[in-house]
Length: 435
Image (cartoon, rainbow, N blue to C red):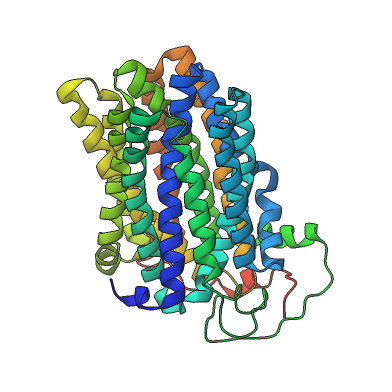
């Protein structure tokens, strides 16, 4: 409990996000459990339900970056927390009123997904305003570590709550967690005047500069961010890889609860415990990131983790009752440890590499490309699970996940030890509405 956690504003952000991530992890398990155990949804319907949470990235993913670059990031995050709290609280309310249906769950997932798009984009912009550039790896490591701890605690807590009180009640924890996050964000107000174009979006805590925005259209601002990502050899390849990997990973996620409940025959508590294992991998990844990047460099560590650790996910389809559960534990633990390290490296790289005033648009463009494949992957997972059976569908999807790592074998990555700290001058010359 040191380093950045000694700084009050970062500590409040860290506490709020940790609690919120516990609630989100509960919802990741709680919503499919409601669909499978309470509403008796089909495999395809569970896939559609998962897709609905990711669909907003396709609809508002790109303009979200431009909106966040125009608005105070902290206020955007607080508003999103409050909206999400109301949405998830409406699920048990609808159940108690006898009105809960798969359609209502889909609506909640859609609107909450839109709030998540705005929140996550604003968060990527807000974090660099709280820490110095040299502290970004530490900041992202601590946030990733707490998120991973939440991924460990949340599913188990959701499973136990569903076992004892019912799957619907578990979502109340998510609603409460959003209120805690909003309260913590209220306490992170930067000292002095807080301008969205200075303190919250420049990514430099010690440097405050006035910016004069030229009157440009939202379409132009979106185009600036898109062109920067598409022309840059590092941002482009990371986006393409992320889109391919996320397509397969979301399809796998859409089938996981169905696989564990209907194929393996587990109850809610056991499902919660097993789905908590990715959180352990995330914690391990956060703990070793500093050492891995120091030894290999950020670029090489990225390749080592994706090409060396993620293939262990192919053990998951071998899962069965009893001792064969060890295949799931080993596969998920190693693969998610590698994923956690890569997520920390990529987040810190994007925050330091983005030109001043464009972090929101760069983040939104990359996430639009990456998460935009998620609804397709979820529907694909549900379709393959219905057509081939869940186990065979998992083989197909996880095989595609492993194969996607080869997309990173480009000259710009394999020829470097570390990722660069700033783009080349040609990339920065993309027209932007700052300076």
